[in-house]
Image 1 (cartoon, helix red, strand yellow):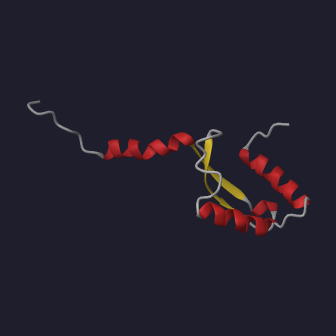
Image 2 (tube, rainbow, N blue to C red):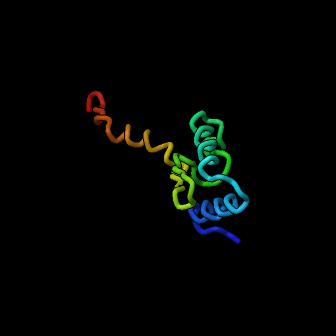
Image 3 (tube, rainbow, N blue to C red):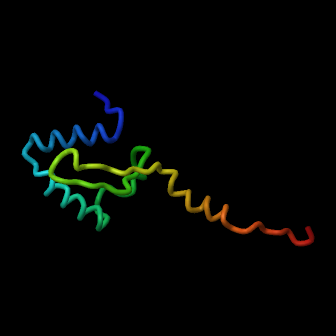
Length: 93
């Protein structure tokens, strides 16, 4: 069975955790602390086409959300710095 969206996959995973007796609030607290000290799954370079940039959680499945960013977003800062830089004039031009 394939999931059509990351949100759908998250909901299914959380439903499975909850049915196994996992406290979603406590689980979220642990995941949040791991993510904040950067010992989570990394920046997404090794798998998939997105990277996790943030999430929210709570005791209910509907409290959970993830924010993903395409891997190419890491180049956006460079793009905008090129756009914002003043035009360079060629000497003698």
